[in-house]
Image (cartoon, rainbow, N blue to C red; front, side, top):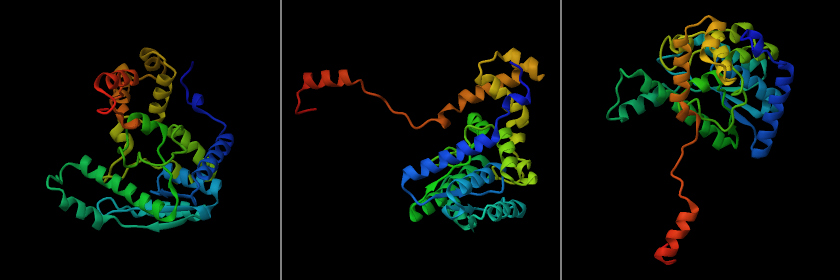
Length: 281
């Protein structure tokens, strides 16, 4: 198999139909009044919002724009409003600054210098607000995680990784961009650098250490169980780079699964009950 960009090509007209049908069915089965989603102005949330609007009708979609003082970016807010206007989605802008400051001052061991812990608070606060609106309005929360970032663990557990369903989670970032263009999302938004916006000047590709165009092909090759050396040779990258990605996939496995617990063997439990007495069981 040749690892060229073409291996990630899909019939995006068909993908649009399949995802919108999925959204319709999921929301219908939930017996709720639609969805709430975060709209950041980035490609993933813009694509998700567009798909939900097409699937459910814009009147059944509520988008929340959730800026805060440290990372507030007017261009991102403007981009979010552009998408909302294009797909006729109701939008509310909620500034989280005061709420976040209250949380920071409440935590005895809070460390202003630890940007990761601080950023995770922001991501989880966004989800608290989304779920409040969903509970209050009898809606469900639609996530906007893509496959690239999910596999790499590049998300906050119980933050942006939390949702009732995530319709684009099986699409790599480069595929999401192509679907976005198919949906009519402006190219300036479809191709803008990705950022979780958890601290100033944060860029996803800088933190991942690789461009999505290369990352997606490496992930695809690993998904198809291609040997490391073959992926490296085809993409002209160091084998160490691929091994680092593999280690990250394994290291972040816990972020992609529900909480697990100890499983008691039923036969052993019944046997112990008999030994002790029914009353004590």
